[in-house]
Length: 457
Image 1: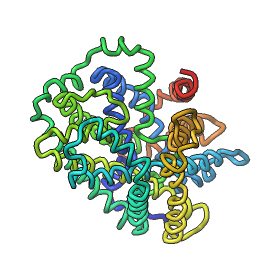
Image 2 (image 1 turned 30 degrees about the vertical axis):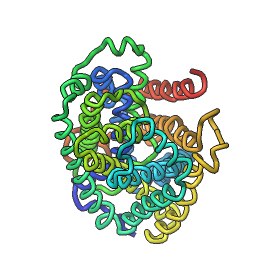
Image 3 (image 1 turned 180 degrees about the vertical axis):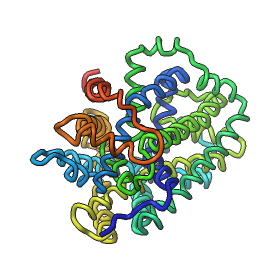
C-alpha cells in the first residue's frame, strides 16, 4: 500500500507545529516564566531551545522520512542487522499512549471551562470560590468531565478517520488558523489593559537579579526542561510526519520554521496573560493554577470578561486538540504499519482503547483518589505525566541522538544524507562532537534532575 503524503509543505509545517504546540506552550510556559523571573528566563529558554530540542527534532524527522514508517517501525527499518533499536520505537509508542491517557482529560477540562465561562458559570465568584469550583469539578463533576473527555477523543479520532489529507491536514490547517487568530485578538486586547505596561516590562525587559534570587542553577535547569519538553521530541511524535513528506526540502530549515512557530505561540501566550495578571493583581508565578483558577478571576474583573474568557479557553482547547490529533495520527499509523490494519480499523480499536485507558486519570481525582503513586497528594495523572515527561521524552531523545550519531545505530553519514536531501538549509556537520558527547550529557542531567526534584528535593 502506497504511503500517504501531505498535499503541501504548509500542511507539514502546521501539523508538526500543531503537535508541538500544546499545553506546554500555553499553560506551562507562562507560569514557569512568571515563576523564574520573566524576560531573563525567556532568553535562557530560547538559547536551550536551539541547543537541545532543535537538533533532536531534525533527527526524528530524518528517521521518519528515511524509513517511511511510524515510530514503532522506523527503527526496525533502519537499524543494523542483529541490533535491538526497535525496542526504542515500542517505548515511543507507549509514550504516545501514556500522554493521551491524561492529555485527553485536560483537553476535556479546557472545553468544559469554555462552556462554563461562556455561560457565566464563574460570574460573581471571588478567587477563593473559583479555586473551590475547580476542586469541585475534579472531585464531584465526574459525569461532565467524562463527557467532555469522550468528546475530545471522538473529535480527535474523527479527524484522523478522514485520512491524512482530507482529515488531519485540512482540519489542522483551519484549527491552527483559528488558534493564531484568537491569540492575536486576545494579545491586542491585553495591550489596552491598565497594567499592560508593567506586565510587558516584566515579560520583555530582562532582570537578571530575579534569576539570582531563584538561583542560577535552578533557573537554568527549568529553562532546559521547558525548552526540551515544549517540542515533544523523543517519543516519535515528530517522526510520523517526517514519513509523510517528500525529499524536495531539507529538514533543518523545516525544523527551524516549526520551532519558530511553536515558540511564537508560547511567547504570545505570555503577551496575553502577563498584562492581565498585572492589571488585576494576580501573581504571574501562580503556578499550574494560573489558567484554571487565576485567569477566570481576571476575566470576572474585566469588562466583557465573559466573551474574552470564553475566547481564552477556546484558544487553549485548540492548542490541546492540535496535539491530540497529531498524537492520535501517530497511534493510528502504528496500527496500520505494525499490524497491517486499515485506517478505519485502527481508528475504531484505538478509540475504544484510549477511552478505557483515560479513565484512571479521570477517576484519580475522585473514585481513585486513594491511589497516590508518587507520595501523599499525588494522583494517577501525576504518575502518567512523570513517566512521559521525566522518562520517555528524555531517554527517547537520548536514543535518537545515539542512533543518528554512532556506528552502532543508523550512523552519522546516513543521518546527514537524509537531513540534507532537497533544497534548503543544511545541517551543520561541525556539530557532531557536541551532539555525540555534550548533548547526551545535558539530557542525562535533565533526566537525573527530574528524579531529584520529584523524590529528593
